[in-house]
Image 1 (cartoon, rainbow, N blue to C red):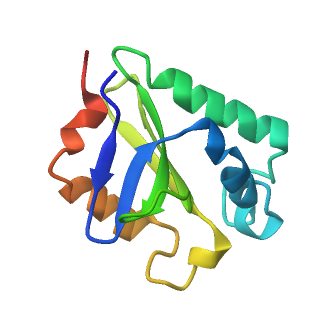
Image 2 (image 1 turned 180 degrees about the vertical axis):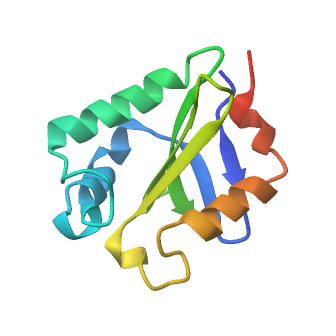
Length: 131
């Protein structure tokens, strides 16, 4: 597996790690944050399953799902989660969720900024890489 690490001007995307569970729970377990998402708040067990699935999918070849930590450039702490998944018709969907502390900083929803940074990252081709 070639680990994904994409960096834009302000944000970076990296592989999910076991230590990210608590930070992801702070987002996915938060009723206010999930009010803006397509699901209800997640439990610790549900978030752990997401972390496990993200790490396991990183080993797949071809890789059809990338669950990635969103961080501030130069930092390691997860402040958001991005998921890119390919669809059977060769399309892909991407979704972002950010911690409430990141709201109002020009990153709201992650979609415009993180999506643009992902699209502009010089090594973005790693996401569809076949080993």
